[in-house]
Length: 313
Ligand code: NDP
Image (tube, rainbow, N blue to C red):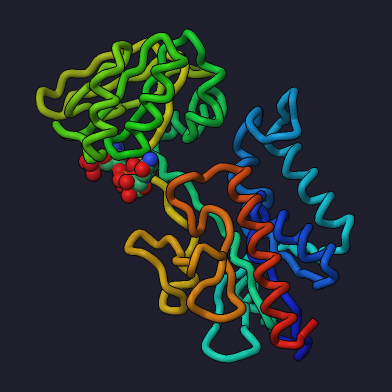
């Protein structure tokens, strides 16, 4: 249970957004506490090389990069704690956070940086070959498949965008669509149909990703005819949507119908004063490490302003 100490700011999550918020908050003498959550370091810890984060001209391994974020946040005095925030109560001040279903922490302000998780098909082969040819981010990993053949799974804007992006790098892109139409917006569909090296396979589902050490192909099935075939590929991109990690905020904060938290007036403020959100938990469009870090910085500045106005710091 709580020892009645009230923290200035608790940061929930340890991806680029959370650690950047921590760096700024710690340097502003806000004494931030950060809970790392179930996947310390966030989505980048399941990426190999990160080559598009400014400041790393030679690229950097995803987990190594997140260790550097953590080291920088620690250097300025962030109190980094293991543990998952499993419940919140924003109905009265100070706000209450439940850690690992048992401990309670009180805080004047909160920065939510819980991120999002890519949805996966749920195949054993997809999991086994993750980061060995299987990816959920074309912008992050597409570069490694220059001149190769790849598959993108999905029919929404993400899949259309990823397939179009990859068509500029890869030799051939197959877009596997489970129905006979795309869900993607008209303009994105046009781009898909215009790309010469992009072939849409309609009514097509993935049976298995093939390969032992790395992706070598995909077995697909036409769900109208039942016909199965193997396609040799080197990259397998899943783009069937993301799920923001915001379940614990349901009923407490305003969110859109897909669970992304809503912010006010181009800031990181939510509808509860003193509760801010950064990174993918509020971003369904950009979803990049650098944009997450940017909004982490904004959230720390917004929280600092709030705490000063409340005469807490
Ligand atoms: P969506 O939920 O819009 O689309 C998911 C797609 O994946 C659908 O086509 C769906 O098929 C398919 N799918 C779902 N599960 C499976 C499965 N198990 N096997 C095969 N296919 C599957 O997600 P998006 O990430 O594409 O988009 C999310 C939101 O973000 C949307 O609002 C979108 O407009 C927005 N967005 C906007 C962009 C932009 O404007 N530049 C870029 C990216 C996203 P089915 O259609 O049959 O349900």
